Image 1 (cartoon, rainbow, N blue to C red):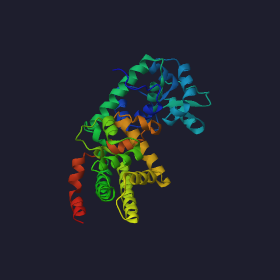
Image 2: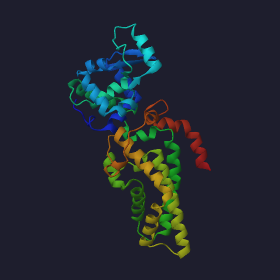
Image 3: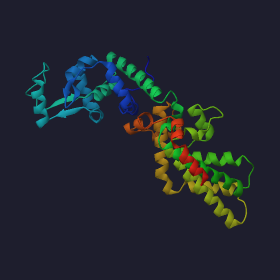
Image 4: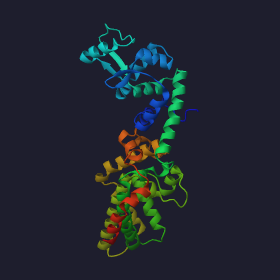
Length: 337
């Protein structure tokens, strides 16, 4: 299998893989790397890693020099003091030579070995491992999400409450657009798109194309809870602004007047940190889970934290139908209020 992403060049792509505990667990089962047990976990010396990746030790040392911070973040550790002494004593029970006069010893855990394999450009073995990593990561996400990555957002336990709240505010917004803006029916689509463009720089058509949504698929059904919360806040606030301005003027608003309200509202400083957060989460998660790139939000892309893999693929994540079945009584009570 050819590499689909440039792991040697992209620290974000590497970290997305290393933050995925389900893929790491599967990789540990299949790669067949046997380590030295230290504090209940397998660790590896430079010499072992060099043999496994079929490079010399000097190559490993060069990458430790150029990518040390990243490798340490993912588990490479320099043992000193008591840890070093204990490690040397434990090594006497094995045939591994740790260099008993060494003042410090570097050890890799499994994640940092994978990290190094994703960095090494001069190793055919590393290239082979990268291919295997990508296959397992893709298969793991597909399996855990039930093959429905397009709607992976709905597996989040926060999705249903956010969707229910957003739907209520959406009704307030469309009612305000209807009542207070003097324009034909295309105004609903126009001002909905202005909300989207203010939050994530894309209109509905652009968003659908990026996620490969069919014409009848709803944009908001694919949005993460945090994005839905922000959309709801925008629409609730805009509905109030439209109403207040129309009441002051004693008439419906012209298109130009409505446009000004939308533009001024989107520039409020109170929204800036929330918009930045929503853009980052949407762009980062979509690239990681859906392999969908929001080109207008590339500057906001970060690696996805391990907590998000637990959130959308772990034990707490569930298919939307399961969530609805569990909460049907609650939603009926809310609907009757």
